[in-house]
Length: 137
Image (cartoon, rainbow, N blue to C red):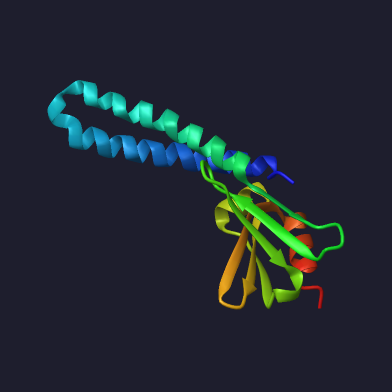
């Protein structure tokens, strides 16, 4: 399932802020080229918004029909997939930062032996459902 609408707003804001910061850094370094270097700030901001949209479209999570396997997908330009057999899960947690709570989002942390998988920016109900599926006991 794709990410909820609140995750899109969060990804766009993160991309805009990151792009603006990168543009300001480039403009500061290229100041010797003159006033034209200030165009780097809006150009990088637009690129940052594009990155945020691509990141949002890459978010997804789901469980198999029988609840035996969890799948998490993330990434802007290269997709990262995590497929976790429920039988290997040692613990789960549902975390939510201040920025996520403002949008009604949460992150599910799934702990395995020697690894950790995060299912990012799900609604609170969906995060609780996925955590329950991962660790039914």
